[in-house]
Image (cartoon, rainbow, N blue to C red):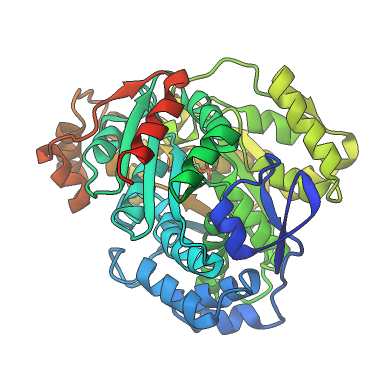
Length: 497
Ligand SMILES: *Cc1c(COP(=O)(O)O)cnc(C)c1O
């Protein structure tokens, strides 16, 4: 399987090469030249296998330049012993036809672990294939959860270094502490003045800066990205959708072929894009329901065809979805416009220069057939957390609550009662103050105090990896301005060679 860029459809690269590069040099995102299809009966076959075997089978379709042994080895390193249970992605059934796909039982308690536990292993194997002996420098902007998950995935992985930037006032105390206390000799972390989009835009600029690339090359290093634009993250995310469907078969909830909707709390459009690819592969998914918070740029786009990032930015209780520029949307647009790379380049230029773009009705019609979209504000999410807890004794985090709320509204508006997988993306203990306020009305200033109270109310235990944070000493407390980020990068990578 070869990969091309959304801004250069004639490019042909092996998967390993795209994993190393992260982002294409033309600014585009890598996409597989074809979407591989599942064979008839394959979902039932997969339903009899464990997670790593399933993963190997899906990987093998997309990563043909890797051997099956290599792929299985990567999956085992990522998913065995690193997650709470044998199944990394348990499903909890809520009432009739709603299935919570919990993707947060990994080391950092958010769904980003699903991809970021395995990306470093893909990267090391990819670098071996490239055979030039270069070290990889991972450069990442995070809206909160990616940063820690990437740090945890890359920590002390031979031949890699990682630098993470997070928006100074855009992450929770727990998220910030998780990053500031990161161990490992190949890691660096800094806050950035501004919001996530500011940090992400600056990272993209550093990435494509020729001078910086040259300086890195002199040191025998090269950039790669752990952001959700990396193909090495997209593919593992496709796996859990295929696997969830297979689980519903093996649990006797559905028969192969039965249509199931998927509802995803969305920020950068990465997670839901993986659901789209799973559907294209032949998983019988019906509507892909895109759930947003008050930053509802995607709700508007998916219903009107107008993408307008030039709007008020809200800091919400679901900070990992506080995004106005959803990078992965570019991949969907590329797929829906018959791979017209010139058109995609024009759209993205318009977004950069004018803060908006608009797609024609023909593309909007395709979007509407595939997707439904909705949003809710903090209040809606809060109420939903409370209702779920009261009705099902089920405690969910603020991001997941956005998805459940949007899903419930979707059901009422459309009357669509199709069984639905709702993606649960974080442990409620990652955002304990908001969760406590939702279930009990109580306002507590401190994350850890709030977590203790939740433990009393819910009998759900706080994950050990979060509990231990309050005693750890922060290592990385610095903050820089956007224009100082390049300097921080250069001094970090220059320091040790
Ligand atoms: C990153 C994140 C999201 C959004 O995922 P995207 O792939 O950016 O759409 C939702 N919830 C949580 C908890 C996250 O960490």
